[in-house]
Amino acid sequence: MDYTRKFTEKLSVEQAKIELLNIAYGNGDTFFARLDPRTLFLWYSYFGIAPWFIHQEYILIGMLVFMVITTYIAKVSPLIIVILCLGLLGQGGYLLIIALFFGGNLTTMLPLLILTTKLSVITLASVTVFCSMNPDKLSNGLLKIGVPGQVSFSIAYGYRMLPSLLEEYHHVFQSFRLRGRAPDKKGFLFIRSIAYFVKLAVLSFYPLLLSTAKRARTTVEALETKGSMYGFNHPEVKRLKLEELQMTRKDYLFLIGSFLYVVCLFIFL
Amino acid sequence: MSTIEERYTLTQSQKMMVFILSMSLYGLSNMITELVPSAYLGPIEFSIEYFAFIPLTLCILFHPLYAAIGASLGEVIFGEIMLGQFGGFGELEKFIAFSLAMYIAGTFVRDPKNKVQVGIAAMLGVAIHQAISVTVDILKVWIGVEELEAVPGLAESVVIVEGFAFFNDLLFSGILFALIPTVYLVPRLYGKIEPLLGMKPRDRNDKYSLKEIIGLRLVVLAVFLAISAFFFEYLSESDFNMEWEADFLEMFGEWYIWVSMAVAAMVAIITIVVMLRKKTNWNDKEKKVS
Image (cartoon, rainbow over all chains, first blue to last red; front, side, top):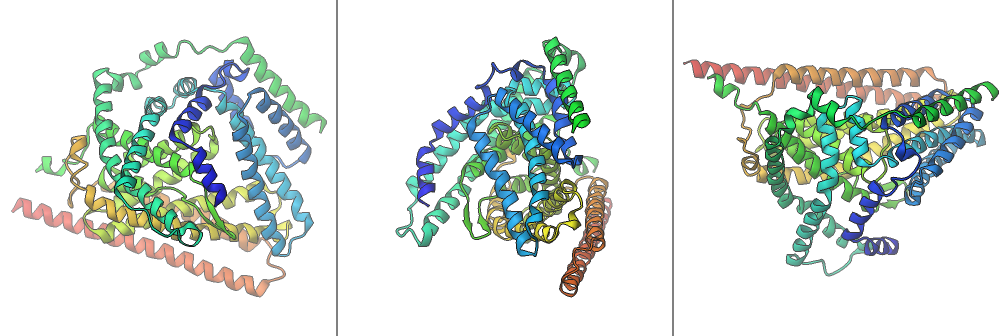
């Protein structure tokens, strides 16, 4: 509980907003950020699926090494890596303990290790790809591969609106706290305080639902005025918007390099 | 008469409004739940899994399809991409499962003022979502580990961990963050929030295309049945129950009965709902004609 309190003390709304923008726009100068989104999608579509169907340990380990290198090049923030590692270890360990309980022995370890390796390859691939694309690039790339215009609009809208939504939520929450009365006793394991805050967190959504409804209406009216509904799915508009996306020599070299690496893995291991 | 029948068809911009509303609100709530730490009591995790009441409320009050898709997209964008945790293909499964569950919950409610209906729909939505994600999780381990049955104890442990998580989520998150808030919010927002988007509130006789609903429900049922059948078939074929033949067979038998009973109950409920709906439509039409 002490840990939680420290955690919440450090976590202010302002800081959260800054952190978000940092994640979104922080690493625009890495090697991966300069590649075309389509290259990244293509690359990911192999490394995101193929590991599920590979059972040879050495190939998986080779892939893992490759992923670690790409993650390093992509300069993914350490916080994300730590969260990922904890998640993977937690899941694997939990399964292991219960498997031991049901009469498994240390041979249970190996398949679980392989599973964890697979999951790490997949998650590292996705982290590499999606952390090195800023929102504009991601939404343009999605538009290019045929995802409806509403989705790419939503990504842009999310980045634009989230800071103000968070702030509004924070205001509502604080005003509930001002008007309400915190429980006198903390209760066993802070249970009363937690229940009180959770209740406030839920109640704060009631005013927010109404104000967001208004906001949504304003947004859609503005979109209509600008003719965006027409633009979302019109080929000519799309072509103009996405003209800047170009596959360059770098993209082809990267794809060929990865392909050769995987082929080598299969041949030599 | 036709204008009355078609009153609840939404314009393109109204659909977009519902979509944006649902996306930004559920996205925001997702970000909050991601940031709130969770507490463990032994293997039981007390965490705020998700604020399911937001999409549930919106699906019940507005057109369920757009609210459901908006909520899932909001989760992916705010809760994953913006926090730098986007999982790629893994998100696709979440996206489908969540929108399906919310959509079904939304179509289940015919009268938003009826608290019993709203409550059942809320629990139904959470249960469907959890059932699908548990099934997918088990399948993941099964595909990921070669010759699962050769590893002693792994299969049972997976089933038990996931089954436990299912009931934990259903009873803890489901009641605290889906059932109670939804039952509290829906009657209060009904009639207040719709005018802000320039729409009329849903009323008892509004209906979505009946074909659409039946089609979807059947598809869900079929998929669910197929998956569970596949899974149980697999369980029965694998010989991991060597040591505990008697116990485990009994357990397995019981589960199977429960599954088939649940399916039967679902089919029965759906038939009754459809029949009632048809009947009321028929009566309405007759009244209008006379």
